Amino acid sequence: MQFDLGPDPRTDILRRLQAALIVAFGRIVRPADKRRSPEWVLVHGVIGAQTKTAASNASTEGLLAEYGSWEAVAATPVAELEAQLQRQTFPSVAAKRLKDCLGTIIAARGSVDLRHLSNLPTDEAMVWLEALPGVARKNSAGVMNASTFARKAMVIDGHHRRIMQRMGVVPAKADTARTYDALMPIVPPEWSAADMDEHHLLLKKLGQTHCRPRKPLCEGCPARRDCETGAVTS
Ligand code: SF4
Image (cartoon, rainbow, N blue to C red; front, top):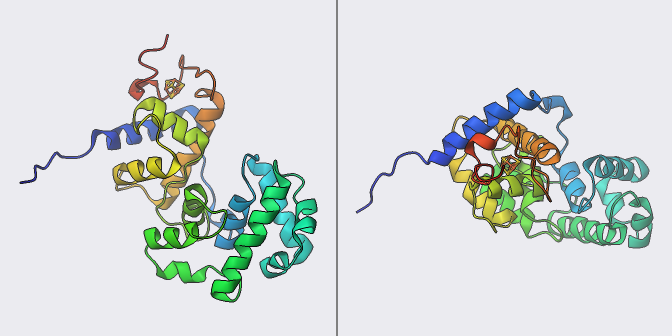
C-alpha cells in the first residue's frame, strides 16, 4: 500500500528561492533570439572545463569563424585545434575532447547535426548526448535547456550544486548527475524551460556573491531563510 505524502516541501523552497533571488539580483532572462544552436552549446560545453563562460564563448565563436562549419573543425588536426583553444584553461584536453566528440557525431549521423534529438523525449536525448566523448550531465542538460531546444532540463554547475547541498535540498556529497536526479522531480511544475534557465543563472550569481566556495557570506544572503547551513552560521 502506498501513501500519498503530498507535495515535496522542497518545491516550495525552490519557489521562494527564485522569488528572493529575483528581488536581490533582478531578472536574468536569456532572450529567445540569443539562444544558440544545440551544436554550438555542445561544443561550448565540451571545451569549457574549468574555464570562464566568456572565454568559452569567444573560443566557440572563434572556431566557427575560422573554419566555417563544425565538420571542418572536426577535420582539423588536434595540434591546430589546441592552438585555437588557447583561451581555455586546458587547451590540449579541450582539443582532444572536441575532435573525439565531433568525430563520433559524424560517424553516427554523417554530419554534426543534432536535429534528430528534437524527436526524442528529453531524458532519451540526454542519454544519447552523454554517450559522446567529453559530454556529461551539465553539458547534456545545457544542450537541452539553454539552446534553441529550450526544453525543461536543469543545468547544474559547481555554484548550483554547492548551494543546493548547503541549503540541504540535495545530499551533501551529491555529484552533478545525482543533484540533477534529485532536483528534477521537485522543480515547480509551473516553471517553464526559461524559468529553469533563469534559476540556474540566478544561482550562479548567488554563488559568485554570497555562497562562495571557501567561505559563504550568509549574512544578508537572500537564500538564508530556507538554508540549513545559513541557519547555523553567524
Ligand atoms: S545562507 Fe550561506 S550557505 Fe546558505 S546559500 Fe546563503 S551563503 Fe550559502
